[in-house]
Image (cartoon, rainbow, N blue to C red):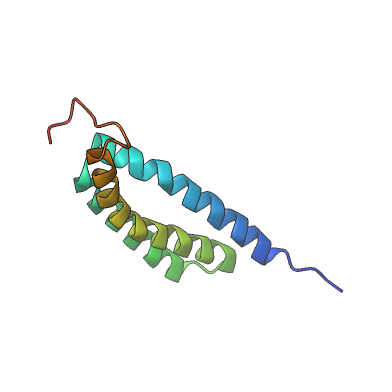
Length: 97
């Protein structure tokens, strides 16, 4: 019996990509504000197109995960703004609101 580790590797990589986007959303809202949603949209579109063009299945899957993590982050930026307003996260005092 041969073991196929690809599913486990993709699962771990997905876990790390999602884990990376959590602090990215926090930092983006802190330094840029909700206007940062454009950056997540652009990153998602670029990663989605790249996912379609790459021949390597593993890389294509990871780019798809990055793309949809970016798309999900658009909503999270607006949710992060509400969390800041509730006082759950610090507001950037140097940025105009």
